[in-house]
Image (cartoon, rainbow over all chains, first blue to last red; front, side, top):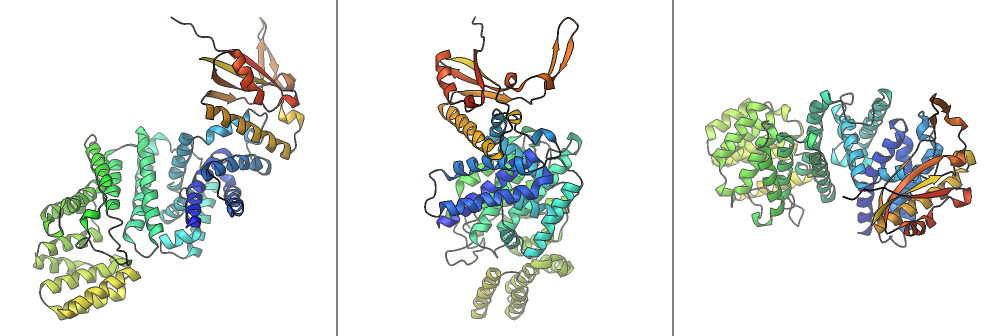
Length: 413
Length: 115
């Protein structure tokens, strides 16, 4: 358990330290910096083996500061001004970099750099998880369901691109802020979804992904120039989803669908924060997918029982969402909502127009929906055969187990 | 409580040619001093100065290049601290790490006109 606490602390500190040091030394030294920070943690682990310091965070910060001096010696910065410590008073400047608000500023800069358009979308997420959130290669690969090798390649390509294009460790110029911010939100949204929707990972990583996404959105919200209705809506959406994160999996590590979740276990303080954020969106004129998704999440949270869910309202939001951004998953969700509304003919018609391969790893959702459709039609045999397809295509074990359980229930009908 | 400026003069690490180990040890002391003052809540700010100097002086506005300024006269930076009086600041300045390198701390009260 202690090791887990240390791992956790390291992960959080890693991002902070890398951000501070990159700000000081520039991206051209990122490899050296990463090694140095890694080394700091190795040393800490050795020293902490017998006794963890009373304030481990302060301990790490102290070591990191000294590391800065260390690096000053070893890094031959092109810019002479950082190459030297001319007097003891230089300590004042270094110290300031380690103040909380400066650390936050450094991390925000890092987010914007991670989302630089010269990086490919998949590289952006991997780079952000590594450099801002301090995930290890293994953790990123688990989080993104991608081979470590592939992640490694993405990371090194991202770093090369940043150095080659001489991307500055700074906010984008004013004209680009809005566009870049959109991408930042997208990356954070995807990071959150990786944590929320995928179950093929330990609870710790799931919660960490969601937690990181929320932390970074909060960081963005702190700066007035980044605030928008869209950003508040994204924050609200994450809060709403997170409020039922721990009810999604039961103590036996099985999936609990929203139909069966213990609604009294939903975490209300988060719902409250989400509601406040939704109210904030009213102060802005913009509209976004996040607004609609948050509105849908609210409808689910409002219902005291699954049967009380206002599916008509949810359908309305989904339709608006689809108008704004048509996508196969939204389309499938609309079909699922129609299923709840017992508009079975509509469901069939919709499902038949979906090209299953568009759903990629999530095709099991489609087959699952079809199974439910036939179940409602009381065609149990067909329902079971679609459940089998869903089972065969399920992307992870927990989903699979859930579907198998469902099949057993059907067989008992 | 009043504000005082502690101005650090001399002890130019570059000129003294400190070894990396010495540099590290010095900085450790500076960090510790900084932390101590922060812990006491007396530190109000400070800056370090780049050791490149230009002097403009005289009626002809004569420009003197910085390289002519000797390291022992060079202001490296300053802290502003809040204290009862100058004596209290003298006490604070006991922890300045660079006396042994010929460094000096000049203590000056920040001027305020009361209404």
